[in-house]
Length: 278
Image 1 (cartoon, rainbow, N blue to C red):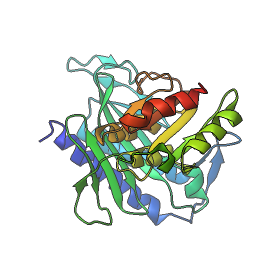
Image 2 (cartoon, one colour):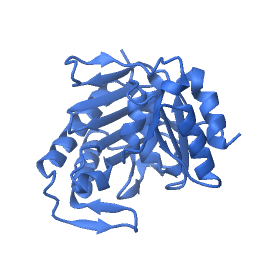
Image 3 (cartoon, rainbow, N blue to C red):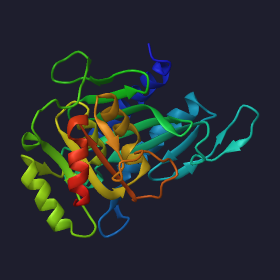
């Protein structure tokens, strides 16, 4: 039994509630705002985030919060002292209420709810819920990765890909930076096929059960995109790092600056080398 069993059960239940809200309004979005030329936010992002944050505040009133739409919400230590969400101290819930908003707004059924609990600067529970399939990927730092509500029925443990050959890999890939065309071409030659699905959290969680053999994104990610899914991939047996081969999670990392590579241990180094163009 994980020492985070109660928090995990809570996150699973809240993520499912947020997913139900999303499906009630799916393909009936009434308002879309534009964050930037490439990024949008819907009324459902806000409603979903409010549902999740209200539930966390009610259940764990001292914990800090870090959410995509509303940012940092300070926590309180036992003596009442305030604590910022990005201090790396205490407990912080990291929430992406709707990852894959553009997919959602366009009726493309690949989006998710992501909820993680970070303690002492590292994710200790992670839940990624796919409301279109009724699936929840979950993990704790002291337990296995699990999928709930899959086509197989009962909840079961999941494992990352065990394919022998890199040439058989189907990977989630989004590259950027210098010589991106050359590096992308070299990786495409080495694997069966790359995909870019529009929800980093769900694609990264898929590494945990081998639907994607690997995940690589060079920049553009934020803490809430990876906190839950990175833990799920890691507890499923994948090696997860940043694109320098170092730790994949830093709670104070700037928005949209993070890069991540997750792959089975036997192939992680080769993919890292190819991403770097070496």
